[in-house]
Amino acid sequence: MESDDPDGPPTGRRWLGDLLLWAAVSAPVAYAGLTPPWPRHEVPQLVGSLALLALAVAVGRRLPLAALAAVVLGSLVDGNFVFAIPVFSYLAGRRSAGAGRVAVLFGVIAVGGTALNLGLLGTGPATWFLLASVLLFAGVFPWLLGRLRRQQRALAEAGRRHAAAEERERQAAVDQVRLRERARIAQEMHDSLGHDLSLIALRAAALELAADLAPAHRAAAGELRASVAAATDRLHDVIGVLREEQPGSLRPADETVAELVCEARDAGMAVELRGGSTEAELPPLTAHTVHRVVREALTNAARYAPDAPVTVTVDHAASEVAVSVVNGPAPAGPLPGPASRGSGLLALRERARLAGGVLDAGPRAGGFAVSARLPVTGDGRTVPGEAPRGTAEPATAGSVPRTGEAERRLRDARRQARRSVLVAFGTPAVLGLVLALVYYPLATAGAVLDRTGYERLRLGDTRDRLGLPERQADPPTADTPAGCEYYTDGNFPFAEPAWRLCFSDGRLVSKERIAS
Image 1 (cartoon, one colour):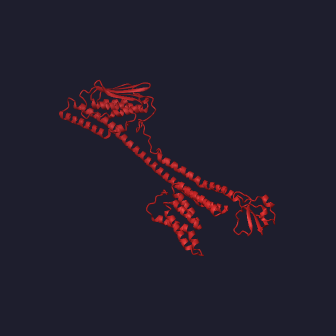
Image 2: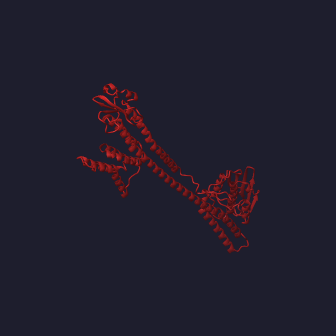
Image 3: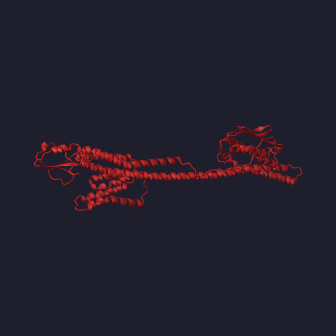
């Protein structure tokens, strides 16, 4: 298919447009055919011409080049088809996807027309130049304008596609920001509530073991501890999976390790803090990671080693900070509940890696130890999806990179549109110059009578003695006096007639220069 505009089922609007197009291109043909006198063959020729134009309009959407070729062939029979050539040339440029076939068609017309006019029919150079100019300005130039219009439409369509893709990506970024914020809130619920529930379970266990507690109250404390443990497990099942997808979490702004230890100690844990609180001197990401390691380790110790002594050590050196949380064996064993899945430690390892450090965790002397070594010369990076502690995440949906494919198509469409503008206006100028350069040697070959030769001519001399050029120039007007001949002096670019020589009985009776 030559056209890139696939035709669907014909619509009333399309039928009306085709009908108006046929009426417009048929008007010159119909006017000439209906104007008297009417030769005998005029009516069949008129009917055939109108039918050919109707066929060209009918197939013009799917086969625009075939429609143009039909109109060009019709112009060989009826000269009034020349008014339809610019119209179908423009439509061919607007509807055809490629330019190769059109170039071949125009090339065939130019070569065939030149051979027919100059070789077989003996047409003069002026007539040939006129026909070539008609082909250029009635055929090639409208086709280039159609190509330009096509590229403009393609550019507009590419711009619309690009804007739509950019809007979709912007909306996706907005949705991503929303999902990230929801995930952070869910992570905060998991971390903070999980930590608090573990402390509540620890208090309930301590209350359950009190010696002066009544049996009914001891049973209620046990039920409370079991309920809290079950709630912790359900919280882990519902939200805990986000640990692996979103390792970051929110925490109260400016909460230090010392405050975290005091909170755990108030809940009944035997916690000892060694080392000064130097978080203010650490990069935000490193300080946040230290806080997360201590909180996660205290939560695990409260759940899986209740009443065990816990030691938190923070050692700040010149180039790195070392943090460790070590708990001894649980006197009465872990709290009832399912075994640990280890997802919290996996999240801590990933967080330590993103901070440029390493984390180790495992049994030690019957208890458990979590230790991490982190650099203190951070580059200010933040964990994906997490803002540094105490700051809000500056994510915005407006700063969205453009879609690569849409950007490429837009650049290609703009480049093709610029190229089409250059071709649309440059090609006729170049072809016109070529026509002039080709026409000049054709018009002057054997037809130049220079001023010196003209001045040597003597009235009364016979034509044979004058030594005139072999070929005459085309007369400037149709009403040429009988016995007169025209010659050019080689003026550029059209080699127009410059001299008129009139003969009577084979002798020169007058000579004159034609005013240009």
